Image 1: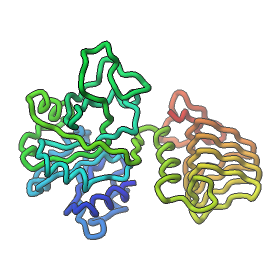
Image 2: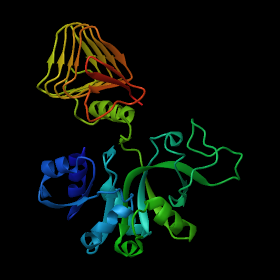
Image 3: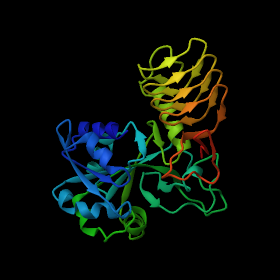
Image 4: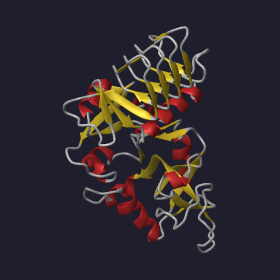
Length: 321
């Protein structure tokens, strides 16, 4: 996923990139090294969480010479329209330009942000009442000419905004963008309908994997709306639909898999049934196992299971959400 984002940045003309690291950061650095197809990479390691805005503080010298700075959330996946985002920012010259999506329900993302008909941010605070079926505030508020949209994890700002960075910990919305809006400064949005996914929970991660595999060009003929690695072993009598199978996956005779992510080296035993679930790396489900809406991983001594999870046969059966 990070490689996909780096490729989008490179194609947009990005001259260099910084990657913020915390959990398992050494694995990311080992994977990508010092550059991505000629685009230099700098790593910024956080011992303590600095916040979405505070993360830029250790990078002040790195960013100082940049005409424009693009920030992308690491837990977002999209067909990033970065050329359009940069072009709009250069044409309109606001303090910042944010990508927003109309594909996501604002009720699932804290009410979204308020955007007027010209695409300017009115407020980052959620509306008092937001209906699940629309992107608009309920009519018990005063009539407004704005809409609610979900921030899609990519934004761009120009060099002068770096001079206003507060000391960490700090948050983009609370400590920079909302105060700018309240003072009358312009923050613009690029509204996009490209495929976009936030993978902040296992459930959203599963949805992203399945939908991306089926609609992004990864699909291979005959795999019924999903994606299979070339190194999988699926029994002829097994049925797999709209699922992602990673390298080394085995699916036994008569097993059924629906809208699932089966990770590297995992296996589904004979007659098993896996529905809307993630099966973690190297997990071996016994024959006849039936799971739905679950995240299943190998039990580890250094990682106590969630209170809502069950541990059976060395496997942790946890809730997907």
